[in-house]
Image 1: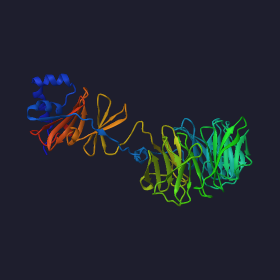
Image 2: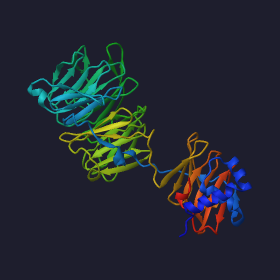
Image 3: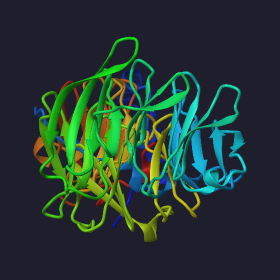
Image 4: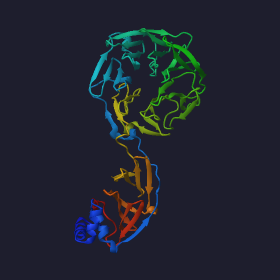
Length: 469
């Protein structure tokens, strides 16, 4: 295959500079190139056609950020501990609980708050919650404790809990701390844990929404209750109560709140399917079935993702991400996924931390405001209007208008050459596409809403992408 090389291009440019065509060309198009010099120089031996066409809408396929390995990084190696649960503050700083301490990590430095040397504090940490007043509440298998403003640990209640990790500590909008235990529902008042009589004998999970409501799922029967928290004493008023027939009477259940404020619950359904429920006003249920790669007989950890519509499901050896109505899956053999009781917490700047008992923690940058990856697209150039131009794997030219979010595809039917290999945008707003058309060197250029196609049979089979600058 013949290609126009640099020496030929230079000779053509010199010829153009000595002609009348050159003066017209350089005034109209100050951003010159070898390719454009060739086009105007060889007008007498080229053929040219024009199209008025608006192209067609295009829907790009974005690569799920979590599947991109370069976004994964080892958590601060100086924090050499194995965590079982964690929480974050409003600035995205992490509070991570291990067997022997809680670690505060601000992204650069770590501060360790060791537990008291008592047998009950040596058991597994089940849940941790950072309150609005700065106190840190911790639930272990044998004790409920608080790390106060003086940064000293104080036991609130001796408990007997199983080792299962679930949402057990939450805070309503009025600042009241609630704890759901196998022995019932508790409220932290004046530094003491007080059981709420007349409610659940055993709480599977609980969570607070953004409207100062408390959501609880009880054990045996599997009942959902929603309470309004009212008055200075944070009294509970039942607003809704319902038996969740699709949830099993026994076994784990889990609440989560997405970044958009929606409440979701998760358990293994009676049909042994994994089901996630979104509860709206009136406890209207909307469920999604988790992906088929997950074992229906094993419980799956479900967490909120960094975006409003995302969920993260973990069941080793898989992590599955639900976003924009579809699931993506990644496998342990390809990614450094923590392997023992893994959990997810949200960090600042749309990052998450994956951690687990007896595993190294990792962080994943899921932000899309700086880096995005699209399937089958190669970015080429930005035009004078701030639009981004791409070449598609199927040889179409794709443009993305950032101001409107609109994507448009142009093909040979619109006047784009059938084998493009480069797109260049000049300072006057003209878009140039070079390569070949019907086995002849050719270009297409877009000006004033019209595509023009120009072939150069005498030049060769194609213009090399290296000859365009």
